[in-house]
Image 1 (cartoon, rainbow, N blue to C red):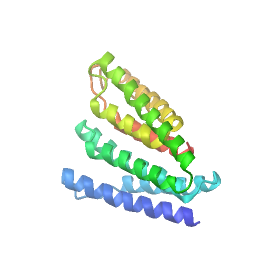
Image 2: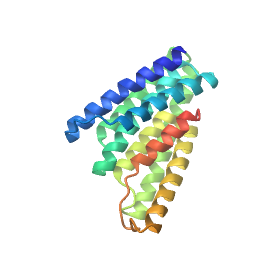
Image 3: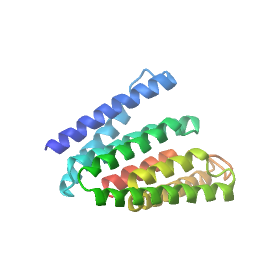
Image 4: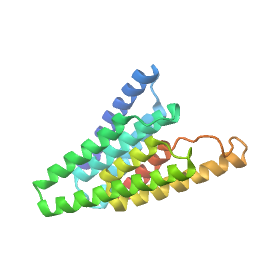
Length: 207
């Protein structure tokens, strides 16, 4: 019960921060009730399922933190087709702090986590950099940076899950838009919303 309450409170704070950022960036005064509901549902899902998975509260808060960040980024990328560098720095900073905290628990495990995180960051950013070179306009620098940052935060196993969900969902969405003639193969699609969907899905599933 304590875990559930903390998760809900965390997402309420995250929602308030999201509203503040959007209001400051886009001068939006009206509150988004649908967004509030989504945040609360995520908090409830993590609070309940992570108890079932027997994860501790730190893992729950770690999952909710990255979900909150990518949801904010998704909204910005959807509107502006950019991924702010502040978001990349935030993800890398939080991941670094979590690794440093783990030193006090287990130094050997911390080294393994750092290596895994670094490998995931290089692989993720590298794959998208290659995609950018091949597709030219298909992948932006923001996409490369956020995938690299997520790799450092989530590590290899979780990043693979996020990429699978994100790429499948954007492919399905793109095909639907083309088949319904609401877009063409030349139209640009913001990738961050699909990353947010991938991260949220994988975190709820306990990756």
